[in-house]
Image (tube, rainbow, N blue to C red; front, side, top):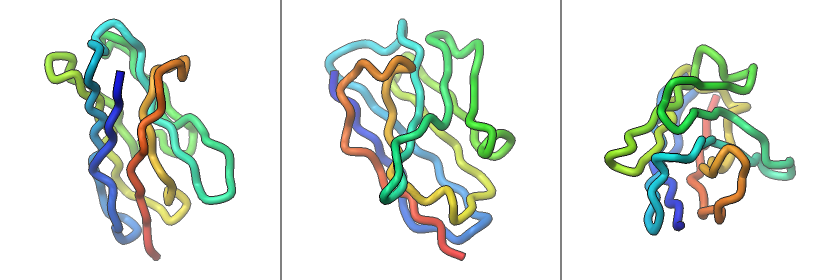
Length: 114
């Protein structure tokens, strides 16, 4: 499966972005999915996850209430709506299965300025 992340960019603190993760080569409809991020010089960390049917979600504590993960299985796409962005959210964002067993994509860069 190939995962392609998009929707990143440069935004001022307090702004919003919507990230998309489109998959090809395999249906994601039976897979719990997640978003992850890696800031420069830091380890990749979990951000959010959603079950295969969208029934349940889970978030990194620092993004809870600001980020929303969702999915459209008909479009084979997972989304991350990011509101009230902070400079500490600056990172490259990736999607993958919740168990991180799929091939990583190239990610999409999110930069939040003060």
